[in-house]
Image 1 (cartoon, helix red, strand yellow):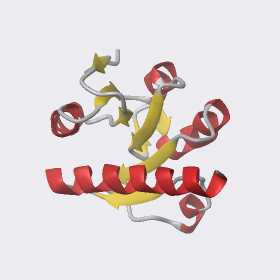
Image 2 (image 1 turned 90 degrees about the horizontal axis):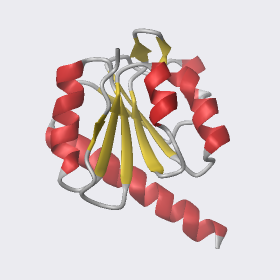
Image 3 (image 1 turned 90 degrees about the vertical axis):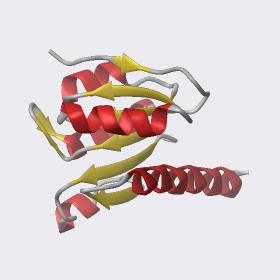
Length: 133
């Protein structure tokens, strides 16, 4: 059974999809002071947690019930503006690069890496918004 962890400190909402509970807890701790954070540990819970409030998804590629990148089309159908960053221990492969994600970070990561990665995604979102205006 997947745990649902939610912080509601700020308006920006991040969904962390990470099967390693301790790592998800660490990401939540790092990001929770600046953002509203939700955590899912598998694809099923990720789909339950994802709604129109989620602005950024940090997505692991290897999950216990499937591949993280297989969630991308469902996330995009529900919210085409969501920013998706893969955070994984696997180097990008040609087939994965074809998926519609916005950034890729290879583990292990430190606090400043995750904070910088999220800021990079947010800036990309602002650029997309400016280009559409």
